[in-house]
Length: 489
Ligand code: GLN
Image (tube, helix red, strand yellow):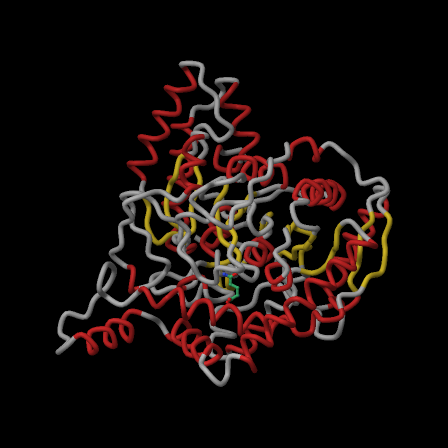
């Protein structure tokens, strides 16, 4: 076994026993990146020298007796998390040369635990997309079938973890962007409750929906990363001042008596039979571990796509108004006057999907249409939240698919935005209701592509999610394999 194949937990244990150094581990990951990156395209930028310096520093700290839950562990970061002195592009030409003067709070927290940041991962432009194909620089591959998408928008994060380039990553999830690529790439992805993780230094897409969370190779590692990043931050007014539970404690608890809700609307027509079979197998696994299975209903789920694709673009159109070429980022230097400069900067700097969102969002917010679109969508959002509140009277955790199908071919949905948006149908409600959600590998399609299972829980019940996720992982008992990527390289 090569060091890059280890989970975070295994690597930390080996390093604590002095059987592995962070320098060895980081070099192993960097070699793996060198061998695979031409095919994987997971990274927008790499910082190998910085990573090796951080690894050497971690080794010194450990030798001096220091600890840290991620001390010496190589990780990647989605390229919308601000990193001091390191370009942060958001996958967009408009921020191609943007170098933040500060670190996001989550980056500070990972560093405080001793993590080694290897590079910034590819993503859909401003996190708008479901395949990472709207990235202006690189389109990551699915390590299980390199002609397929890795998912999105945190596709580079998922691809880098699944292919052994790093041991874990941070992504962001506005409508599924952590859970969906995790599912398509065969790893674990967790979206925490709205307010659980500080978003200070996360470049905003849709502020009432965005959350940061981990992508890891197993549920235990997700708990480790969650422990590192969760908690109150006075620099983010939406962060909630509430103690963080010890997530590890939940892992060792069984699921005896836990009520698992199966929302019937998530299993309707259009669901790939292999995905259905995989999720139903997950239900059986939890049942045989002692959980109680209950049938529940989220009747307004059918409006999720329409509601999300009004609210998210509306908020985006407002958030992205700041990219005007004046203070930072790309500027068209040939413009005749100020208005022309705004127009040309934004026309050249943004890609087609971002422009589509800005147009939809601006329209939905404009006077005369606001009541019919944005306000109506916000009202239906409340109905969806109320559906979940009712469901929590009957169950503790919900189980469902993450995506209607396994990964699809690159290019397949790129010219069909509606088909792309519909692929988000199972993940959007979690964000609209502000809930925590987890994607755990559940099996493989006959074509050998991973299929994830989604768990959702009430606000701030991350521990419960990790507990059920861990039991699911144990029961499904997939052989832990890195994808046979080396054959393709
Ligand atoms: N696919 C969704 C979108 O395109 C969700 C993206 C996300 O969660 N960042 O908006």
